[in-house]
Image (cartoon, rainbow, N blue to C red; front, top):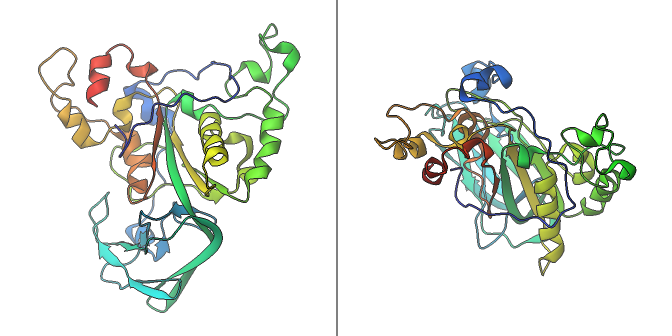
Length: 321
């Protein structure tokens, strides 16, 4: 099961139509999703922040300590400057290849607020700067089509066709929430305190050190973002007292089984002789490798996990992984 916490989410959001994309089997996953971009070792190791660490992000607030991290050449020294304090980063093997080209720094516990912070990372005469950084709660939203289902487009919803008596309209295909136009327009109301990150969808047979994506305010992300993740985060932001910034990280792919999202360790724990066990030597983790490993250093409040249909045939296996 994906990292740290499992949240059973019953959203009070407007109803969405339940047309899902075609199911994807383990064997055709790599044909359906793009392969990771080919890059040289030097490009991977160039001094930079990880994709999930960027301007406009939300970091975990006190009492948690947020981690910022990125990549550098082997043997490099990296310093992080935050609120007048210089922190020597640790350069160590990454979660993917084991190469000692990942730097990470643990920031001091910082209270939740809407104050916009900046920070710098320095190495070998180069300085990287981030701005507009908030501290609050950070949640990962993951799963299959239930979670991937987007808000839609400003014009996809037609209240006169709510039962899809005319099935050849946008709202009767995958991805259009009720009153999508109004929902998308209202996202701008949350630009001051919410930030969204959508992980680029790809698969890999081997762990990747980084993901693809960028932090955006809700109005710039718009209707392509997960409806369930948005409604969950929006409602959380609206009911927390005191109100704190909310960062949402969406990492999902429709029509996928839990095994794609499970770590190799989780899969090995599910192997055994029983009919519902995974056969010894099972290898999968193609979405864990490409869409989770690059997030493992992120300090989070929890995970909203919305998946299950592709494992409905054998729920006992699901409860293991």
